[in-house]
Image 1 (cartoon, one colour):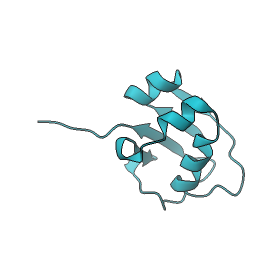
Image 2 (tube, one colour; image 1 turned 180 degrees about the vertical axis):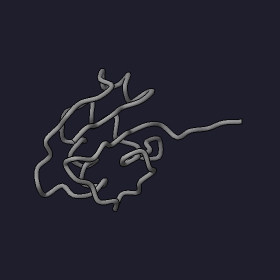
Image 3 (tube, one colour; image 1 turned 135 degrees about the vertical axis):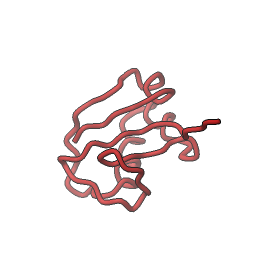
Image 4 (cartoon, one colour; image 1 turned 90 degrees about the horizontal axis):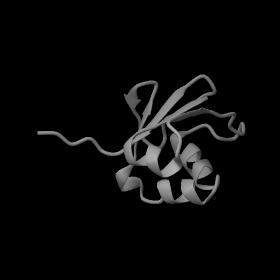
Length: 83
């Protein structure tokens, strides 16, 4: 699975993208975020407040119950604002 990190998440984690092999029991966005939090202090902090994290699965916004699979591209980014 390809994970992409943007803006403050990229800065906090020190990585813009990575390929990961998830445990087979992780099948949703919520499960992925819970797994991310267990990866270490930087990940725990980056995913602490989900009010400031948005998720896209294969370039479409996704909620916590969205199913995910090993071939998916998951992007994490802050809320987008504009004027």
